[in-house]
Amino acid sequence: MELSKLLLRAGAIALTAALPLTAPAVAETSVSVLRTIDTDRYDPHTSTARSTAEIMFMMGDTLVSLAPDMKTIRPLLAKSWRVSPDGLVYTFKLRDDVTFCSGKKLTASDVKATIDRWIAHPKGVVKNRMGDVKEVRAVDDYTVEYELTQPYSELLYQMTQHFHTILNVEEVEKLGDDFGVKGFDGSGPYCFESWEPRNQLVLKKHEAYSWGPDFYANMGPAKVDKVIWKIVPEDNNRVAGIQTAQGDATQYLPYWAVDQLEANPQISVTSPPFYFWTYYVGFKITRDIVDDLEVRKAINLAVDQKAMAEGPFFGKAAPAYAYTHSGTLDYASDAIDESLFGYDPEKAAAILDADGWKMGDDGFRHKDGKKLELVAYSFSNIWRQVMEALQGDLRKVGIDLKVEVFDATVIWGKLKTQDFDLYTMSYPYVSAGDALNLYFPSANMPTPNRMNWDNAQTDAWLKEGRGALTDADRAAAYAKVQKQVHDAVVWIPIVHEPMFVAAGPRLKPVEAHGIYGAGLYKGLSLELK
Image 1 (spheres, rainbow, N blue to C red):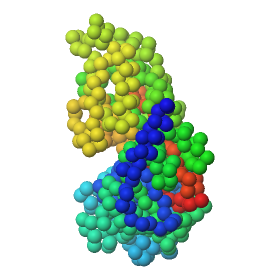
Image 2: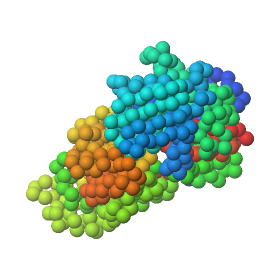
Image 3: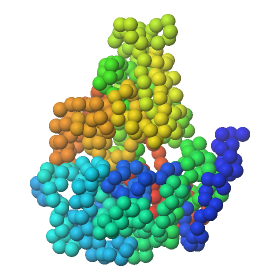
Image 4: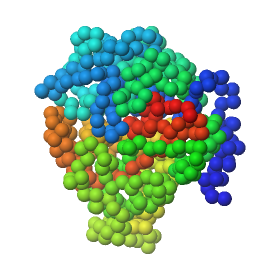
């Protein structure tokens, strides 16, 4: 029996153990969404996790939204905006009909209070995504002035992300440590009802909601009364859940199940038109051996991305030969030499030979009495299979790669150390500049700049790109960085991940969105048949 059928049968047997038997009675128009992991708190200012983002997008709103093309900025809470000629002041005109779930009107004061909270929060994450804020002013109830100390060319794109969710800060302060745990008052199409961590989160329809993004056919209110997010860690159990209608939707599909679900006439599988989430293996370039550019070049040429896309990803992912997807905003196709990353083991071996790494009797290369031996820190899940393949590829050219695998509760701490030569990572982004500004500034060492890439010219070009006043100037600055870091082959790009959203027998096909890997986005296309 083929693998997918075996796993599905196992899932059907185990399903009652995976899904809560004592779940509370829910409304007839409820939808169950199956996912793999939970977060520790639903707070947009303290979490970069997709498991936080996908809920924030439903419970809250941002000033602007990102169209499915992942390039066009559209209105949301702000109905219009203008930018001063010097790029320092953004003036937003807010809608005057928006309410939080509590019924409180959303005004400019809430926008100011939200950004002030993010700035002041001692555990606030990715504050660079708000720009260098001088002051946010509530000019009147529905006018916000957002002033920067220096221009930030991608501010509007960043404002579409869940970190910029506008909060009812009065309610945040009232809840204290219970904020994001026992309550959340947002302006999104769904409202917080209850949360059992690592089990399920229940959201109810925001009856007053009518201000969704204009690229949705339904701008609100939602077509279902409740959305119940259930944690189902096992792949085969999620697939079985969709097949048997014990779950209605999931984007967390194992790749082996996609063809099987697509062939089922009762189930729809959709993908967003654009989606940017890339898997890569990074080098810590300050470590002995991988500080050698020739070694990094050889390793890249020894890796067969196409085989990985066909193997662990069952042919659903696209092999990656650059650090970002070619469809991203400001991708510099003319500046990137993708041949640095194509599979050519003979050329890899020749580079190592020329660099003095000679094959020994043990089947591995040596130089000056030193073995070409490296240590990689890796996530588990699909990365285990990817790294087994990579390990085999490198062995063929005489490189001994030791892979240490850690689960998600441990690896983030491990990746803050200097004890590894390579590491695994996957990440979402909205543009080339978004990716570059996350991973390559010297100020971001040792994390997320785990490569220890420390280059003053890079920093200068990134600053130039961030501060550009025109799209062309921004793209030109970021093109310089892309050429520089690709020529330095500090990453091994692996694949560009696809997204598939399955809707079960009760549900109409879902309009998937690629933003931050949160395929349901606002949840406004969830509708029962």
